[in-house]
Length: 113
Length: 111
Image (cartoon, rainbow over all chains, first blue to last red; front, side):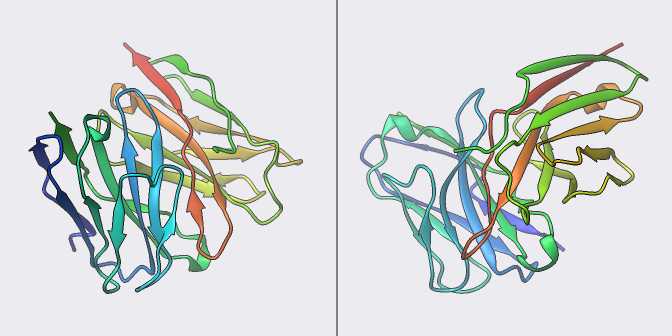
């Protein structure tokens, strides 16, 4: 049981390049989330998705797009990467019934030069 | 915005109880309090959650005040491996629930 799997684990981009971060879950959770964490800071919510085909903006959505094509996968896209987007990105899932806790992936460490 | 406030850092001697406070004065009646921790830059690890009753599991205890405006996470016998950043989070209700993280408390356990 893999839980929440993020790919890639590490990536270096040049300014202006595009990239998609992938997240897949096998927990059959309905909600999925993307957070970013800058050094010494807490996690900030970028986008989230209540179910397949629906997405909503979080605290810091600018510069990102997301796609929830099916229940298992939730991708985060940087169309034109900027150095300010250098961060660790975490994907998380949640089963909204019964107040179950959120589960996190191991993160993608992204550096933009 | 995060709905919780926590001290920036705390120290605890190994083997002693670590008591981490959290204020959530604007919490609504149906919102749960969750605690997570993050070791180095790993993904946050779930610890415990509660609504209004005190809770205990194999990792920790959660004490929530009667007015629900604050809570305390208790690690009964802290070890060096408990050194981490601890986040107190209110689960915000909506079309889908959200967990908004604050800056957390950096707990340093020393020998």
